Length: 266
Image 1 (cartoon, rainbow, N blue to C red):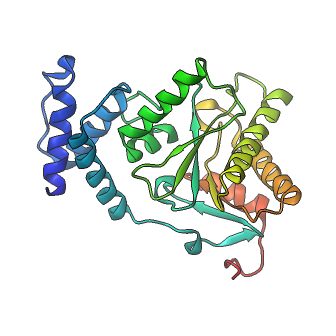
Image 2: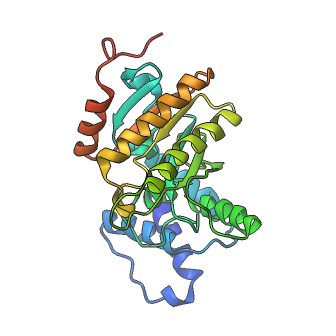
């Protein structure tokens, strides 16, 4: 199949399996069809799917990933020993793990084409990710508390694993408890990565954006948590701070300062 054929197959499959979607028209323009596919994936509940669908979906998503370009740790510049900063799409990173800022339901974002990182990661990974998250949450029999972390496969992403953590939601003034929970998110992810003997992890800006944690304060907490962990543990776990906005890049760049010539040490 070509990518165009795969795209058409996936859209028709997802529409056909849901009787409420039968009246949806398929647009002719490719970018609109890609947006429709993402929307259909976003709203799809965690339920069984055919082997054929997964084969086509995986081929489609992996090809799309290759088109975007994969970024490895060796492509990045070191800001401090064992700490990197990169601005871009976290779904392009081939670190051992990337961190997803999840919500307490831990099933991904169901809002079609929403701009949150949870939506971006689930959309690029494929429907298998929601199925695995659902299995985890069924066994847990309760919502995911803030400050903890869960690990899943990465499926069609270039990384090996996804670490899911729920950050604090800010309503008004940031409290000491909010700060502690955000720090716990970073520590829990680092400890989980170490438990799986991972060597690199990429953090998004947890709790900023939809959860309204002030970006500058969140960055301070993130860096402090990682530095404290690295001082206490000699496991060579390298950390990437991944940002998407220019403003966040400026904040992290200022807080991290400069290290050597900015190149990774061999």
